[in-house]
Image 1 (cartoon, one colour):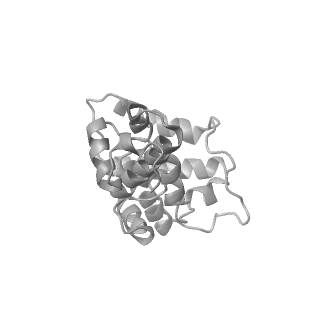
Image 2 (cartoon, rainbow, N blue to C red; image 1 turned 45 degrees about the vertical axis):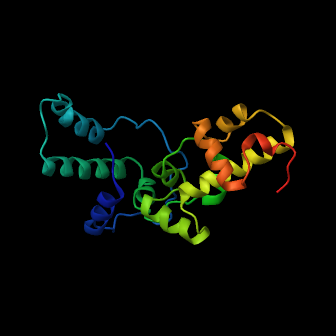
Length: 193
């Protein structure tokens, strides 16, 4: 059972807040085993028929089951009040710090947005504030700069370096490298720009 932020906001909007205890802190752990309770057992017992994939529950019934789930949690532990109804923005990770540490991995823009605590549209908007380049072009430039430094400083073969920095294709890497630096990757050994 999953409660979306949208569902919890709507639930909270209609919810009688008088039973919310003052000063109850949020739950410290993020995963724990629920204690057996009549409410929880009844809730999941009533959902057993829907575990058969040929039976599709109606949307209205599922909304009622979600509401029943929230009430069951609230009755089980008062610390669920501030935990379930915390609508602060999720924590965001610094985009450049994340990209500088993970540029070599094959991550989609959706993956990067998720890992930095953003929706894709928010990620794109935030990225525009820190770079004139698109995220894809920024990644390519970062990979090329790191490759250039490794080739120049260590003299390691291009065939080792290109994959380490996140390129999948040697030909694409060579073309992008020459376009960026004006020399072929093989000619970069010992050269300073």
